[in-house]
Image (cartoon, rainbow, N blue to C red; front, side):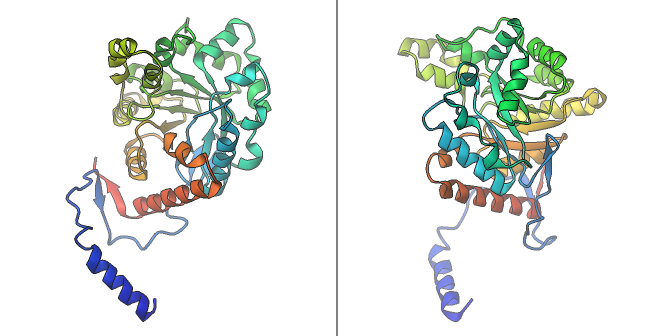
Length: 337
């Protein structure tokens, strides 16, 4: 740094000193500045999902599919996942069960590459219908067509129930998931909720299934029950609105997992946890993954969606900052338990 740059930096420091005073303190962490140098490319430990390595402990959570903008969004997300070493869950692939018009919007393996995990996605109601029709093999056909590593089954009873045109779920989602495992044992599965999360009994049951991962979809992020209420008239929203406030936060659900690990570790068959729902920043993600006593990564949906609808460089800049933040966390922060 030359003399002129140093002088300008000092001037900036003087002008910004008062604006930089902070009254709040994030008490989730111990800050340890004496123990490590500045971060490098190896500061963030490698994570594993679906027998593939992630450079960042980050999963791009399922969002959109079958719309005019989905193709651009999915391609941008796949390119970012390849550049930064993240996993990708596609939005609902339901439309591909009926027609292939939008197939190219979902076919992003060539943008992602072969070394990172890619998962297709269907709702529990569609999976239930395929089982009833004796067409379970369609699930495997779908993942093969998309060159996906496996299938996400999203479970959304509140959303479907509050949606006038919603599908009706006739069997417990748990029984449907077990049926898929029984009929297609080779198909890797991730099971997720879509904005309410789920309680300790559901967590305990899922941990005992041979799943690649459980994704929380916890209360606090995008809430699809609320989204459906916004589509209705005022009386509908007023009367049924309280339902959208029910659910479990990501911290709640990490604690459910940890309790089961401590009391029934020998019963756990599920391999990984994907923590999503209300994960606003890399600090949230770092805290929750470090708090979890199982192998865990975290996921975001709306934050990635916000930066993926335009040019790729906007999404790239967002990912670069997430990486820089995570490098800082792993180098200098220890969580308070």
